[in-house]
Length: 243
View 1 (cartoon, one colour):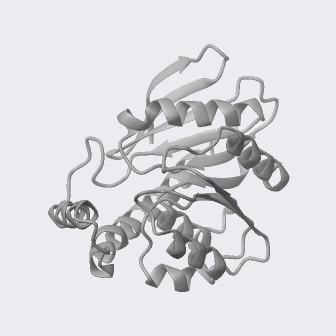
View 2 (view 1 turned 135 degrees about the vertical axis):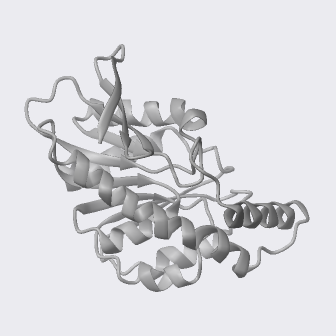
């Protein structure tokens, strides 16, 4: 991993862009930390440039409570090489949604499973690179989407102690079996009127999670209408489990 840029935000948070091989990422660390800070991995649907304002806001909110935060670009997003198979699956998904047709499970599998298989090891490599930094400590949390990536990480990565998952993307049925193996505390967000999300599937996934500590926050509104106070609830969750 190599740092490629550094700047101080107006609240003193240190923002550093980095490259992990060919994978771009960003690390934010609180200015006032007197000891290594717990780390929150910020998940997103892809496109660091497009998502950056929202990611910065989430990272700065985390830094207010003493957390470092980091994110990386997803496979096939931003400037990373595209996959022809993924692009075809995404086009098939768009056609089904625009036609008002049910989304075939085969399309979801073609789009999501290769993404999970590639992204999860990249997140683990990111942890390998970040945790030795003197300003970063454990424990580690995961926050955001793609929810299928969060499910896999919660199962296979023992360094992650708690997760806030955004139920706003499709989940292959095979991931439901993995969800039953999740044992870490979970805080799940669901937008009740999310136009691109199968509400019942999201509820079924929540029911499948095997952990004894799981909370579901459901709010009225579409995909981008998550109330601001949910950010405070997520930070309180991480404060309980990472501090």
